[in-house]
Length: 432
Ligand SMILES: *Cc1c(COP(=O)(O)O)cnc(C)c1O
Figure 1 (cartoon, rainbow, N blue to C red):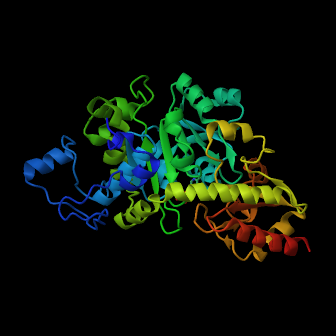
Figure 2: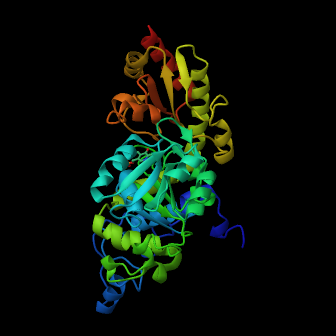
Figure 3: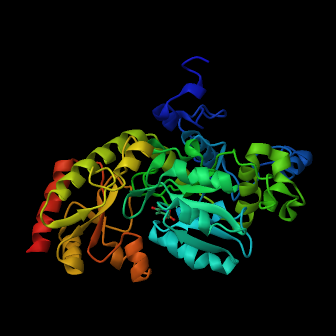
């Protein structure tokens, strides 16, 4: 292997080149936006081979599209996965990730520290499919072990978690998942593969909301499931859709037919075909553009977050700051070990004066945008208790780190001094 071998490329080279050879028809250097629904078959035999999955190719853009494929290849390589399936949103990615594994009466064991919408999806909405979820504090590995039962089909966590910016000890959780013969699914939205590659730490599947740092500028709603290709679906009788003839695909045995790509092929041929949560090629294009600068952006996000968190921590108007990158955080040792390049750029802080002061602060900020989003180049703020986490019970809010006096910041890539000046004047207004 030489230095120019793509297998040796570093993160920033892959972020620009993976999945993106010049277009064979035109030489176009950027990945074209293939704005087409269907693809002409060479002849009837070719069509039959594509439908039978004996040959890989494009049939219909609900399943696959060349622009979306380029993005899938890039994300799979950045996350050290074997394959990837893009979809319409981060929430769609979570359903897509679970679909091949679950069935009525089956459950997942999930972290208590998750994005508010994910807690609602898992505690309420998936019940309509007959699926269940049990929530445990993943800092307590024995509680995790105790929560798993014979119907458990996956363990789910976030690497760095929203809104608190807590960090999960992925290698420790992955070790238990392996012992129990279960796939570990990690939502890596807040860390991105620049800060953490869960597959290299033992995760089976990685999901992302591409809406956030990966696209990075607040223009796209998208999601992805990345398949490690390392899980043995046939080792138990738990994953029959993958290890036995699949009735939804004329009895094809995906594990036998596709080996380490069984999950990826099933995800496209069955889940995407029947659930239809497709990513559009225009969205894939914006996300490909965003990824080109992912490494540069994350470096600045993390540096800025460290400066702002440090400044807030030393301010008498502030009660506490959750950032795991601070030496004062109980998660700092885990953060340093598992996320050595930094603990992300999302965290919360509590302000003296409770709910009223928190709301006043949000209304007084000028440079920070008050929006329900994160991972944008712009710095963002939200009061989780009255917005993203409002549908949770008080106990769930506090468990998720979204109490009444808590304000969430998503630190952008502006000049840190300007962000601090804005926080300073808003804290003055809120405390006055
Ligand atoms: C935003 C987010 C989601 C949901 O993603 P959408 O693209 O909004 O559907 C899931 N997990 C995390 C950690 C998120 O931040």
